Each structure stands twice: as structure tokens, then as C-alpha cells.
Amino acid sequence: MVPKAFSATGKALLAGGYLVLDPKYEAFVIALSARMYALNNVSDSNAGNGICSITVDSPQFVNGSWTYSLDLARLRSAGLAYAVVEKAGKHNPFIQSAILVTAAYALENGALDEYSKGKEIHVTIFSDPEYHSKSDSVRKESTNGSKEFLFHNKEITQVNKTGLGSSAGLVTSLTASLLSALFSDFDIVDKSLNWKEKVHNLAQVSHCKAQGKIGSGFDVASATFGSIIYQRFSPQLIHNVLDAVSDTNAKLVDLVDNQDWDMKHELCSMPPGIRLLMGDVIGGSETPKLVSKVQNWLKEKPEYSRKVWTELNGSNMRLVEALRKMHKLSETDKARYAYLLKELTKKNGEDIANSSDLPELSQIGCAIKDVRKYLKVMTEETGAEIEPLEQTTLLDAATSIKGILGGVVPGAGGYDAICLLASSEAIPQIFQETSSNPSFSHVRWMHLTEQSDGLIEESYSDFTGLV
Ligand SMILES: Nc1ncnc2c1ncn2[C@@H]1O[C@H](COP(=O)(O)OP(=O)(O)OP(=O)(O)O)[C@@H](O)[C@H]1O
Ligand SMILES: C[C@@](O)(CCOP(=O)(O)O)CC(=O)O
Image 1 (cartoon, rainbow, N blue to C red):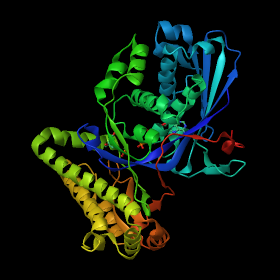
Image 2 (image 1 turned 135 degrees about the vertical axis):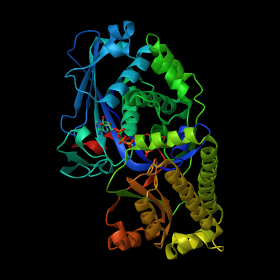
Image 3 (image 1 turned 45 degrees about the vertical axis):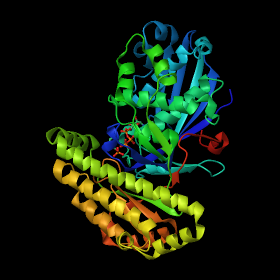
Image 4 (image 1 turned 90 degrees about the vertical axis):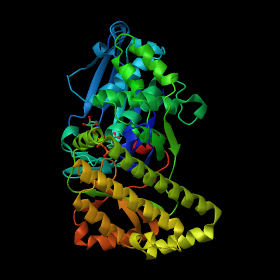
């Protein structure tokens, strides 16, 4: 087998936090250039017959190696939970789950038979620098200089995360890498083979299993499909598979290959010349606490909360529509488009929202203002710090800088990050202005760009010197 490398993207949920948990509403997820990579290799092993060994190495972290033995006979008779064991008893729920679920799918499709004679699959994981805090780390680059990673002197569980969805990227790229080692016809480019959908479905199941809950799945969908308008699948689909014990493998294959997931992942990207600027805010929030406060509010005030959500959803959709219109204009009227971009570098978001002569831009600015207005209502109503005062001050300060259309707290909100829409041309000027502005002293601009594709195949040789 020729070794292959796959990568999946990180994410920012620009619009649709909380609402995305309900299949009624749509959300806008931007895929970001922080990628998680999974490189595979298959070799003969000296393990006994009927045992397949899968090792996953994550060399950027101390103790980052997990080896699982798959007893294929037990896998058939007793099911997955009893047949996959990490040799040293080490725990990485996301890696274990991806192996378990992918192996069950392969077993049921006869793709593990060849491995029963003792073969070893080896996967090496790399993650781009923006996923984790940089403290106490050493940079290393590949021989051709095209990849550069941080090597930490701590275990993965001890390194601070930046909230870009490392587990979703890991599960998605690892699933692709394993499937590519197991199925000779694995191909994510040829759409007719549906492999990308299969990676997505398997990764959703694995991610839910590892987390012990069924989330909205927007992070796995965007890690696979890229920047998208996302509408979730029915949680019952995955419930049924996770609940089944003895007949899981057949149910899993049916879920992955035959069921209608009835979800939306429609490609949607930023208009050219407008960029998403992510600021990592020093501090942090606990998403589950915020979510549970919001859920209490939905129960306590069902009618009022629905009204607020209807308004918030309307604002989210106006933002998506205004961005789409700009995109279209960039193709149909290049001169007008260039003029708008020039004006954006000269004006701030507050002025733009009030500019009747720039309706294309002011629609974006007004939609962002409305999104924030309703997130603020939710903040006050629920007591969850979704857009807390400190973030309001920061976003207002950003909206008064030339070149910035406006910004929001991404995802569940809180103190983690801010997400701004800015003119690409104005970025250097924005960096300069904010570097001397005390309002931004605790903001670190992340070096990220928007990605249209989520899961892609990488060139293996780009990692020479690192593997
Ligand atoms: N490079 C990696 N190597 C090995 N395991 C990893 C790696 N990156 C992430 N993981 C696994 O994912 C876990 C982190 O997942 P978690 O869902 O807590 O964070 P996240 O996905 O980055 O955050 P968020 O959902 O808030 O964006 C780690 O504890 C580890 O089990
Ligand atoms: C609150 C929620 O809607 C978004 C959480 O997003 P993030 O983890 O803050 O990026 C939860 C979810 O969709 O799983």
C-alpha cells in the first residue's frame, strides 16, 4: 500500500450558536486553515494470527502514542467494546472511538479479513500551531519547509486549547486515513464513490461516542466539507446505533451507507477581499455551563425564548444572504465591487452600517449588529455569559476601526475569542492600530485563513523530516 496523508480543518461558528442544536435552524460555519493531519502506513507485524494492531502516534505531545490490538474473532462474536484494547491501558477517547467505529465498519464490509494474518496500521497525527497554546514548545519544520509544527513538552491533555475543534479535526482525518489503509477503492475526490460522506458519517458517530453525548455535529461537518451552511441531522439516528449492542456493526453500516441523514451542508464562503479575522482572547469559558443555562431558559420561558430565537435566526440568515449577494456582485459587477472594497478600507463598521450609498456593505454591518443585539438579549435573559460586557466593549472597539465591518463572539460565545469580518487589504493597518490600543492588549490575532475545502488529501512528501 502506498502511504497517504489526509487533513481536516478547524472551525469558527460565525452564526447559529445554540440554534444549531435544533434541526429547525441553520448555522454558518467557517472552516479555518488550522489543519489536523493523519498519515498512514501499513506493515507486516509479528502479532499472532487474527490480531490486527493499530498504532496512532502524535509526536508533538509527550507520551503521544497509543497502540490498539484488534482481536478479529472477538470483534465478530462479542462486539467492539470487548475486542479493542490499548496495550498500555492508555486513554485517548477520540482516537479509540475512531478506531473502534472504523474497524466495525470495515469488519462488516469484509475489509479487515486481509488484516487477520497479522498486519499493522500505523497513523501519525500532526496538528497546526494555532490549535494549542504556544508556551513551552519548540518549532520543527519538514525538509521542504512546507509544514511547520509545535512540539510541546506536555501531554495532549495538559496543553491549553484555543477552541478550534481539534477533536473533530482529529477524528475526521484519522477516519479518512484508516479507511484509506483498509479500502483499496478509497477516494475522496471522485464524488460518485461517496467516500467523503462516509468519512463524515463515521466521524460523527465516533465523535459522539467519544464525547458521551450527541452534539450538533457542526464541527465534524465543517472539518469534512469546509465552510458551510449547516443544518443538523436528527440525534435519533446516532442514538439508535450507539444504543444497539450486539448488532451494532450491521446497524452502523446501514446508518453510514443507506440512511438519509436529512442534514444540510451547503458550501458557502466569504466574498473575495473580505476576511475572517479571529482573535484569541486571553481567558476562557466553559461551553457546557453556558449551554445548560440556555436550555433552562428555553424550558422556563418557552414562548418568549422562541420569539428571541426567531429574531436571532432571521438576523443570522440576513447575514448569510448579504454575504452571498456580495459574492455574486464580485462576479457580476467587478467595478462596483472594487469600489465597495476600497470604501471599506476607508470606513469603520459603525459608519458603514449607516451608509445608505453602500447598501451592499451596510446590509452586512446591520445584520451583524442585529445578531449581537439578540445574543445580548440571550445573555441578559439566561445569565450565561454569551456576549459579556468585556466582549461587548471589545467588539464595539473593533467596529470603530477602519476596515472592520463588525464582529461577533463565535460559537457558544463567552470570553474565548472574537470573530471579525474585515477588508483583507486593511489587515496590516488593523494589526498596527490594535497593537498600540490598550482595548486589544489581551487579544492575540490568529494567523488563519478561511478554507473552502475541509477534508483533503495532502502530499506525503511534505512531511519528510517529521515522520
Ligand atoms: N494532536 C492530537 N493528538 C492526539 N489527540 C488529540 C490531538 N488533538 C486533540 N486530541 C484529542 O482531543 C481532545 C480534545 O478535545 P476537545 O473536544 O476537548 O477539544 P477541542 O475539540 O479542541 O475543543 P472545542 O470543541 O472547544 O473547539 C484531547 O484531549 C485528545 O484526546
Ligand atoms: C453551543 C453550541 O451550539 C456551539 C458551541 O460551539 P463552540 O464549541 O463554542 O465552538 C453547541 C453545539 O453546537 O454543539
